[in-house]
Length: 341
Image (cartoon, rainbow, N blue to C red; front, side, top):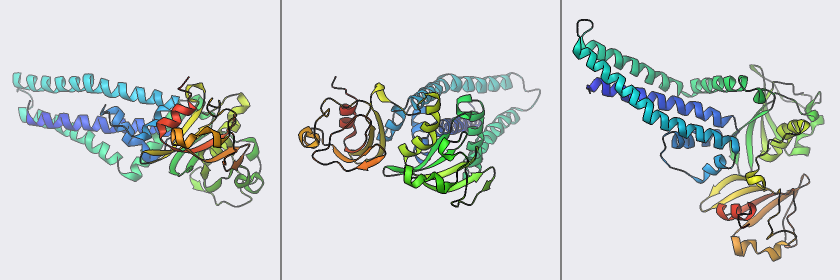
């Protein structure tokens, strides 16, 4: 293969890879995955590198993200096997036809045309990677995805911007107002008191709105808030979805919802929404459960009936509790997903 065709192939393939990674990154972002955790996972999936981290549990513990991940892997495989083969054959065919008939453009001119087209595609993708342009490009893809999805147009969209321990800074697109926010001022909503949430910013259309105690939320607002991720979901997603009898929470194996908060070496900080109490803990006080001895698990805090309680030796885990735990992920998953059954 001519050296210019080889360079053209590299540029074209790199451009397509980078573009598809951007597309799948937006798809994961719309499921609420933190922006700073997305592209590494997408690159690993799309290129079939097999490089994983414990953050991959954020994908495998969510049905929507698993479906996107499978699509990403299939697309990457098809691209590698089929599309790359097609591009190579097209470029070789161009070279063969040029050698057979040079009455039109010269040999060198045709190869340079192919090179210029590939270089232009690659340059375009690099321009898209520039932060201000990338932000607009991702917003365009988000709008396309939202406008083509009836379900997303009718529900509130939460995007995690960053995690801070068990809390997070999130962006919420209010496609539907919860009852507590309907024609009610922020002061009367009592977000901090009811949900331990702090409203950081408010965007309405293309302008920023100053936040005061008299500010009222309207449909279409985009807010940035800080608080516990489950409280944010409860306030702006579940409270709306429950009107239709629909829940937005993700239940693993139809039992307990497990959410990775952060990694700390071999241990993790996890949050478990208890839909079914494991038999080792059912009706058993903490002092008799031997969680630390048997599983190396420590309970950090428990949320019960919208109140946080500290676990002591007499505490008993109950159905409906939201438990924050520290310990090896595999042990937490084994215990609370009832894999011993």
